[in-house]
Each structure stands twice: as structure tokens, then as C-alpha cells.
Amino acid sequence: MLRELASDLPGFRAARFAPGLNVAVLDSTNAAEPTEPGPRHVAPETVQDIIPARRGRSSVVGYTPLGERWARDRAAAAASTEADTDRRGIGRSRFAAALDFALGGSGNVRPADRQDFAESSTTVRFVGAGETVTATRSGAAPGELSVHSSGTDAEPWALPVAEWQQWLGQTLFGLTGADDEPSYRSLMAYYLRDADHGGLNDPIRHHAKQPAVESLPPLAHLFGLDPALVEAAKTLQASRRHLRSSQRGDADLPNGQRLSDATASRDLATLTAEIATLELERAEAAADASWRSTRAVAGGLATDPVAATAALDARLAALKARRAAVARYADAHAELQRQALELRESVRSDLRGRHDRLTAASNLFTRYAYEMFGPSRPAALTVAARDHGYAFYPVLGGEPGPGVAAMTLFCFDLAMAVTAHRAGTGPDFLLHDRALYADLPVADAAAALDLAARACAVEDIQYIVVLDQPKLAEIGGYDPALSYHECAVLSAP
Image (tube, rainbow, N blue to C red; front, side, top):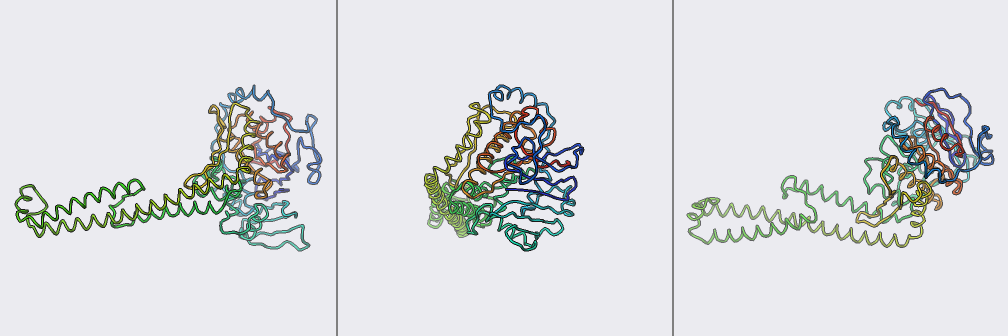
């Protein structure tokens, strides 16, 4: 579990994490008192080893169940937030970027923040592999870190960032270094989604421009699917790209022509018919002594039989070369189609073999959505077989409304994190940045945080959320008994 995150970035105060729901508050008024962060509404035993508990008079220990009140007030709460200030421009917070940077990522900071990150250092402390590990990474020398472990008496030592990523991959995701495994960074990107690059737009993609096939390796690992089939899907996709590239550079095809499986077969039949017709005309031209006069009257290709025959020969040669090229691509398309069908059948077989685990993940997604929305939004997470491999379909039904896409992603990520943690293929923490909650109706935001708190208590994981102070105040006013740990109060840039 994460224990602490510290940085000398402007406005950044050390965050101390506890098990369960952790809230990092962004205070845009810059009026927050420079005091140590502490928990609110948290049972003492969950945080005694980190920081003493602090409670206000009105604090209530325990988790708030979802009740009929939320069902009654949800529509009114959604209507009251429709006039909220537009916050769609909200991007990645410095808090999320700093944690990503300390855990071996680039941080993906905005241009305005790059100088601050280049002049700062960030430290993360967490428990991994039974040890408390502390790592510090500087923006001035991002290629290595200073690392210390409670499992050794040695002084902190320098470690290249590539080795740090390798160790984190082994410790947090159970990676073994096999060729068909996803990279550590592709996995962590689902736990530290980057709002600036569309990471909160689509549950399946951690980047807006991420191809669907590139999302398969990390998701297959996290949901316990066959990595060999994912590699087969990537190989098939690469073969298709190579085929398209070959068509663009083939001199025997008309400039710009693109052949699909259907068009290649159709063009092959058309070219065969054209060649047969032209061969008959060629034979007639060679045998008919009166060809010149008859074709001249008809406006033919030429009046000289020798020249006409040569022109027909040239046309025949060009058509035959084109037919040969089209035949090659038709055969290649047929072979790729055969491989795609075989892959789909293999994926179907694999899904049948992993039915229990996938059903458990789907049930988590459905149950989380039901606890938030009740029967008004039927939900399902389906993993299907397609000719490009696995396909993930998280669906949150019901009437369209504000925040549906965000809550679909929330339920998907929580189900993913719990599924992977249970199997030992994912860490025991998940972070969502403030952009996910910015436009949510207060009732839905409160429901999501309450659900996260209860899921964390059951699964022994951490859910970390970054919230603007006004949003947290709205949520607190709606559900004063919400149980969470205030891990940090930060000054918003």
C-alpha cells in the first residue's frame, strides 16, 4: 500500500495515505493552513501506524450504506448541477503527475508545469514485497532514483529508472519478464489515468489515441486472459498494416487503390473477364486481314495491324500484371481471414476456460453499478471474441445523463483493480483524478466515494481521489457521514 508522497513542487504538501478511501483536496483559494494532513471520519485502528486520528464533533465513524434517500434525491441532485460552471478543461493534477513520476512514469505534465517538475524532486513510500520502500526521483536527473528498503541495512542507493520499472512490474503486477507480457508502464497507466491525454474518456483506453489492439495486452493481464492470444492478435493486426502498406507501394496497382478482401475478389473476377475479352480481340486482330479498315471505320486503337497488335499486347501485359498483383492480395486477404477465424475460435475457447474468473469480474461491475444506481441502470461487463482478439464491453444502461460515462469508467476500473488484486496481478491501490468527478452530480459523486470506501474495506485496497475543495464540500453536505481519509490539502496552481 502507498504510505506517503512528498514533493518540493510549489503548493505541494506531503500526502500520507491510509487503507481505504483517501482524498487529496485541491484548495484553489490557497487559504489552506500549512498543517500536516490527517484523516477524517476514519476508524483509529486503520491509521495508527501512519498518523494519529483527528475527528470533528460531527464526525461519524463507519461507512454510509446506499439507501432509498439517494434514489429519491438523485434526479433533483442531477438537475441542481446542470448549471454548474463548465469544467471540461480540467486536466491532470500535479498530485497525480507527481505520483506517476515517482513510480517510474514520465509524469506527462502540462507545458506550464514542466519547469517546476524539472527543478523539483518527488518521493514515494509504499509497502511492496513485504518491505517498506522509499524512492526519490529528481526532475533534473530523471534517469535514476535514490532507493531505500526496510529489508536492508544499506544506505539509499542509485537505481536506473528502467530497473525501477522492472522491480515495480514484478512487485505490483507479478510480471516475470516473458516476451508476451505487457510493459509495466502500460499496466500502471490504467491505475494512474492521464486526464490530459484522454485517459478518463474511455474505460478500455488509457490514452485517446491508443489503438484498440494496444489495449489488449494490459487488460488481458489484469483480467487473467491468455497473453499468447493477445500476441497473436497483435501479429495479425501488424500483418494487415503491412498488407495495406504493400498495396500503396505496388507499381502494378493503380495509384491510391486499396484492396479489401471483398474488393480484391471482385477486381480479380473483373480483370479475368477483361483479359479474356482482350485476348479474343487480339486473336481477331492477328487473323483478320481486313482489321485495319473495319477498326478504322469504328474508331479503333490504330489502323496499322502491327501497331494495333503491339498495343493490344501491351494492354494484355498490363492487365495480366495487375491481375497477378490482385491475386496475390486476394490470397493474402484470404489467409488473414483464415487466421482471424482461427484466432476468434481460440479466443472463444479461452473465454470458456476462464468463465469463472470473467464471470466474477462481470459480477463486480454489475454489483457496483447496482449499488450506485439500483435497477434504473442495468449494467454488464462483457468480454467477447472478435477477429482482432478479445473485446471488452462495459455498459451502463438507462437514460442518458450527466456523468454516465464517468461512472462507467469508475465501475470498470474498480472491478479491474479488485479482480487483479485478488489474483496477485495488480497493486492494492487505484487513483482517480479530479477531472473524473468535476461534472458529476453530487449524488453520483457521493455514491461513488461511498462505494469505493466499502469496496476498499472488503478488499483491503486503497482508492485515492483528487477533488477540488468546492466539490468535496458539496459531497460532504450531501452525505456528512461519508468515511474517508484526508491524505493531503494542496494548493491548486
